[in-house]
Structures are given as C-alpha cells and as structure tokens.
Amino acid sequence: MAHLGADVAAYVDGQLSASAMRDVDAHLQVCEDCERAVRQQRLIKSRMGTVATPEPPADLIDTLTRLSTVPAAKASWWDRLCHARSATVGIAVLGASMAVLAVAYVIGGSERFDEVRPGYDDYASEFIGATARTLAATYAAADPDHLDAEGWPCHEVLAGDMHRTMVVYDRTSDVVAVSYTDGTRRLRLYEQAGRLDRRALRDFERRAVAGTHVWVRQGTPTVVTWDRDGMVFTIVSDADLDRLVLAISQLPVGTSADSPWGRIGGGIDRMTSWAAA
Image 1 (spheres, one colour):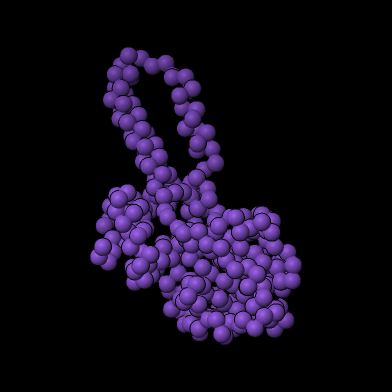
Image 2 (cartoon, rainbow, N blue to C red):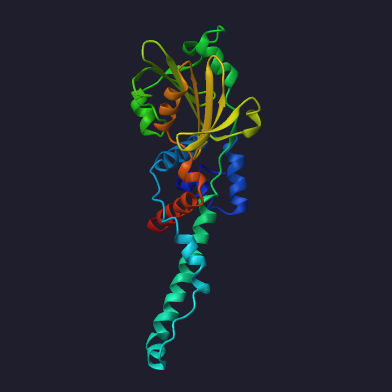
C-alpha cells in the first residue's frame, strides 16, 4: 500500500475500518517512514494528554442515579400542562448527554499502543558501569529541546535540584535516556514509545506514588517504571525514595487516563478534534 500520509491521525485514533487497520499494521512492518510518523503522532497525543482533566463533583453520578427515585411533586393540571413540553425536552437532553458520555468512554479507551519490555537489567548495568556497554557506545547525542517538542520530556531540572547533564537517543530501540545529578546522587530517565508489558514486571512491586501507580524494584540502583498514553517511563537512580517521588510527580503519570472520567475526557477531546477536522 502507499504511505499513510493524512491517514496517520485516523490510524492512531482507530478511525479506519478493520480491514484498513490490518493493511496499515502490515505496512508499518516494512515502512520505516510511516512507522516513525505513527510514533510521532502518538507521542504528540501523549504530550497533550498530560493536561489535567477537571474532576466532576463527587456526588454527580449519585445524583443522576437517584433522579428516577425522587417522587414527583404534586402540581395543578395547569402547571403540568405548562411544563410538560419542557420536561420532555429535558429528558431528551439528558438521554442525549448520557449517550455522548458513553460514546466518549468507548472512544477514550480505543487507542492502540505496542507493548514494550524496557531493558531493566541493561539500564541498571549502564547506571553502575558493570558492563562495557556504555551510553556513549550505544546512544547518540540528541538535542533536548527538539526531543521535548516532539513529546519526549527532557526537563532541565528534575527531583528538585538534580540538573540534566546528558541527553542521548538510541535510534535502533527508539529509547531516549536523560541523565541527572545533584553532584552526589544520580538519576537516569529512560523514555520509550509504547505500552508497558506487564509480563516483564515479575520482580517489581506495585505502589501508589505521586497520585498514580508505578512499579518499583528496590536495590542498588532502584528501578521505577510506569506508562502513560503511549509512553513508557523508567527511572534508574541511587537517590532516596522522597527524591524519586518528586521526580515522578514532575513527569506524565496515569491518574487522569486511568480514571473513568479521564477516559471520558480523552474521548470527548478526540470527538472534538474529529469534528474540527
């Protein structure tokens, strides 16, 4: 098939037909240009997804579910006649709104991301220098501003006072590595496009950190990993847990995307972008 062109966004959003999606999946196996375009589209959407979704009032759902159980107030036949049409319109609007929310929920969870297994052991070895495989030999120096604009977070300062010292990119495995230090402790952040393969987390413990769930492997160094909207983040560091929690809080986390309202918000954003297009 020809290159995707303008259909890149439609593929990432799952708008193509089932047969077209299969054709594109096969094409991406042999076309590096289209595969890179799809990856960049997913990264852009991931970056946009870091904007927090406003949370609805906690009692909203409870109020909606109790509407049918609230007894109707007694009114005169004249009041009922005057309000009959508006009540019908109100019920229709409420039904349409619930239908929109249902569609948004489905659409908000339909994005496709490849599963990836970060090289945790290699990352730890690179961090402590236990092997001859070094960042300089495996990765190429990269422009942090360019990467940051394309959706790869490359903060100048992370975890309070740890400053960025190096940003490198491994084109073969499509991994960005950003190194930080405060002069005493070190932290290395790895970023990889895709969705975290949970089967690779047998040695990890699931924890609630910085408002999201991450997977932690204690040791020297400590390894923390999680994913958010098509990006897998892995931190390798010899810093204390408080410092790691601060670093995680400064990066995209899964709070809004993991919640039903976050998924609905993402679906509405996608529906709005389709309408605008």
